[in-house]
Image 1: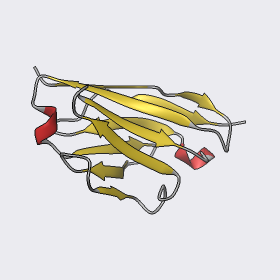
Image 2: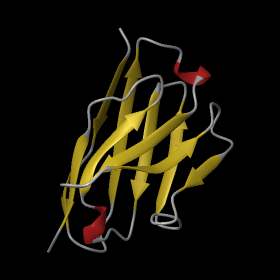
Image 3: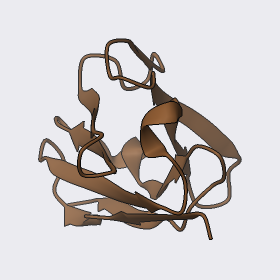
Image 4: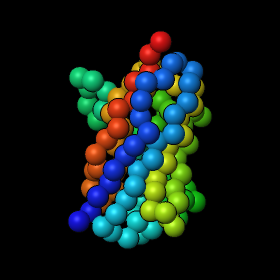
Length: 111
């Protein structure tokens, strides 16, 4: 069974940092490019970032470029998203997405 479980969300003040993780199982993680996507309350899904199968290429939405860093550890079957300089508009449920979309983790940026 393919599973993707995101974790690491929480409440953080503007300007703060969080690191999200996504544990993958049930498929060959190192064969897949992976994405982070998010959905803010009452809004549609927004693509955030992509990393290729071996971690050598990354892409970012303009809204997060320079603040977020995507990475992966294929030995641990885990995807990461380092989020710095967080803004209130980053508040959303964050999902990892590969062969399927996993369960999300809520990030709330508020003072």
